[in-house]
Length: 147
Image (cartoon, rainbow, N blue to C red; front, top):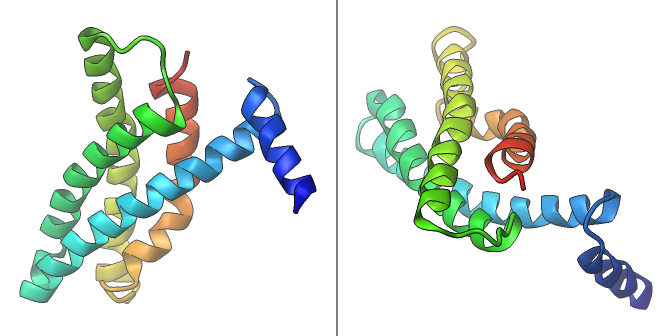
């Protein structure tokens, strides 16, 4: 256990390399878990009301979860020294663009899964996370919150 603590402490002090990136990805994963819970709760609420509303649930869940992602990514995962209103607005815009690109990809895959491949509308969004989580991390790390 002490070796793990030593590695985590070392990762906190380093600025680049494997361990800082791994720690950042873990933080991103925790934030992503909260995003997923928010998004899926909203999605499943729409599906529970009427299964034909699955795409609307996907849109509303996405809008709310991206706002959550931006807040926590800006404060915890990809901290920035420059938090002027202009920089915050630019990062928020970039967040919506980056998550928007993966949202469109995920929506297309969701539609294909449900309409053409016979995947349950309850299972399909969970499968899509295997694609969107790593992709979102890379886009956010190297574009949205690039220093």
